[in-house]
Amino acid sequence: MKPNSTNHSFEDPNIPRLSKQLNPSHPLCLLAELVEWEELEEEFGSYYSEGNSRPPKPIRLMTGLLMLQHMSGFSDEQTVRHWVENPYWQYFCGFDILQWKAPIDPSLMSHFRKRIGKVGMEKILEEVIKIAIQSGFVCTKDLSQVIVDTTVMEKNIAYPTDARLYFKMIEKLIKMARKTGIAYRQSYKRVTKHLLLEIGRHLHAKQIKRAKRKIKRLKTLLSRVYRDIRRKLQKREELKNLFQPLLVKADKLLYSDPKSSQKIYSIHENEVQCISKGKARVRYEFGCKVSLVVTHKQGLALSCQALSGHPYDGHTLKDAITDAEQRSGHKIKRAVVDKGYVGHDASHLIVYKSGQKRGVKTHAIKRFIKRRQAIEPHIGHMKAQGKLDRCFLKGFLGDQINSILCGVGHNLRLLFNFFQKQQAFA
Image (cartoon, rainbow, N blue to C red; front, side, top):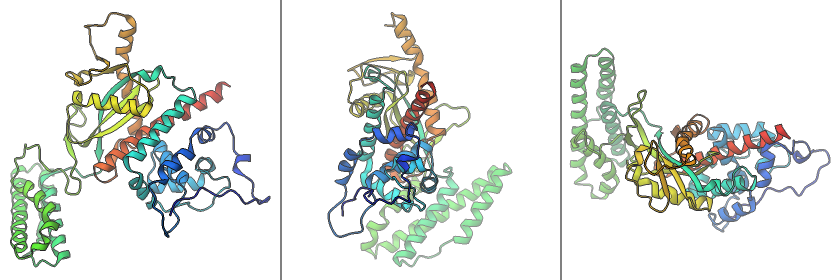
């Protein structure tokens, strides 16, 4: 069934309208008037099928909750709870009468994210960029000059030690065997649990040799379970496809080189990469790279892309610029990047690198290059105030959705502050 819009047709003189009580100059009220809600409803309405089913929630409500969530950096539960307490949030989502109950179950936000996917998130980002142009926050000239950089968006996983990975893999194999009715030889549940605790104690006490012996013992137990289940599957051909993903991961854990690029860092997240960015405080981060394109002056996010694998920064520049041009609808003429983009693949625009001396002839270009580091505070705000610091959504699709919504939330915060300053100086 197709979703309907919020119904405001009934009139009750005893219930005051939010539109007559709230401050019309509040930034959220101004944003609510600028968003093309009808266009978004028509776009996202195509993701719903016709038929006799439970009526879905209004698209404006779901889209508004996503935008407000990443603008504030809240979880799904916190977003729904805060929506009940904040009348400006309710007005932004299309309600003209104060609501006392939660509009949705928080789990519906996860379903809506999966329904509209990456394409829907890109549509929301395009709408926010369009609002920034209409409101005068940026002009079309500002969209032709950008700063490009990459950062790491960590995944919500535990630190991937060998002992923990062996323990988790044994648990997964035994759980799947129980579920499918395979008679395994031994579960090693108590033994592996005590081994994991002892390894932690030995490492804490700097008893490295003892810890290594226990880790080797844990690996041997995983090898036993792995071989036992593979033998039992020879008689259960119908279960081989079900066990294949787990057996492939177990095989990599047991027999792959520790320095291999195919090393596993998480049992339930296949796309996690180990990324070293040269930070003194954090040597390694486990997640994915995110490519960011922001305007040179205002810092408006034009593109936020999660990158699969561990690509070289220079090889991501062309795709980042192309995506930013598609989102903003304007051609980018100049970009400034850091020294990690040496040997980039973008030949259709002028690219300046940090510290570049050759080809820099005017003071204007020198000032343009010196503003390369202006993207760093924006990345910090996306991580501290937004949700770029850690992705809690599952799979690489979750990484893509979260990264784009982080750009949406960052742009909304910039517009919120812009409208506040306009009111202060009015």
